[in-house]
Image (cartoon, rainbow, N blue to C red; front, side, top):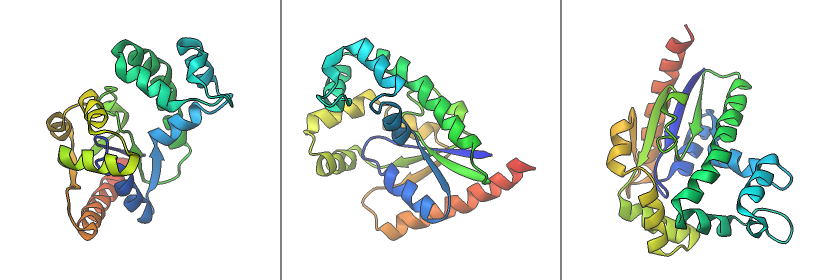
Length: 202
């Protein structure tokens, strides 16, 4: 199967773009959705996180306190690496299981940290959703009510916009543009990926 990795910085519009591909009938697999499922109450990954970071990262109902864990890992790079060592192998193994279960010519795999995890080889082609940093900050502030400095810290923890775009096979411009323009870019790439998937299957 031909696998297209869809990535981009926080607030770039990955979810919107993935939704447009889905409307065209493309199978979408999302690393964030997978990660959420892996750390659900009672899952082995949550038990490993609890063992590593202590009971304080759990809420009273036994579920993960995402905000508290997020504060821990963004304040300490070493703690971030400890969490990644637990989650990333499980996430990619689960993504592959989902891909193997599909019966389609190509799929979109949404992986926000594709380059940060050095997993470019996991997919056949990479499309980056790009927009200026100011757009990212504005969108995340509107969506999550985070303070600008927290959003900037998250952006700083990811690969730079320049590096991300340089590593892309394809770019989707999600600046302040009409939705029609965004949809046209997605449709063009969908047609390209379908053609490439046909060659890939030969």
